Image 1 (tube, one colour):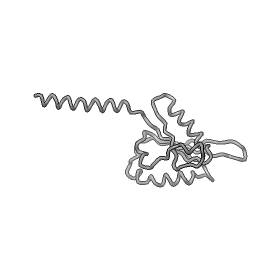
Image 2 (cartoon, one colour):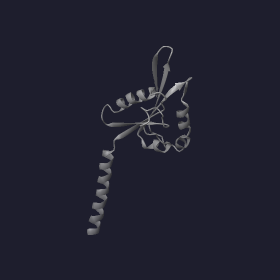
Image 3 (cartoon, helix red, strand yellow):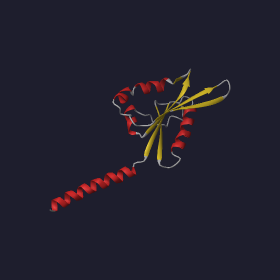
Image 4 (cartoon, helix red, strand yellow):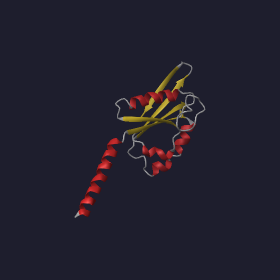
Length: 145
């Protein structure tokens, strides 16, 4: 009988531990960007503020490749393998001649296996594009879902 009680208490502790850990998990959204001159990073910071506005979600801004820009050099670089660990992903890239940046394209091309294995299934995705029209001196942000 003591073994039964001990087993039952062990199971209850395991369940309670899992419940507490699940409640302690904060939703995380990856804001994954490529930024040459910091424009996309500035947009990503604003997106991160919006993600975190209610205090229940944590935004994590990372780059697709290391940057030589001093204001971007402290940002972490994401790996393809970590993408499925997030509860949502917002991709951000400058637009060059109507296309995403080469760095973002190269990163996304490495995710084919994740998609074919359905590892990202059910994870909300968003894509942010930043196109600067230099002649007019204005920046236009296009958000696609």
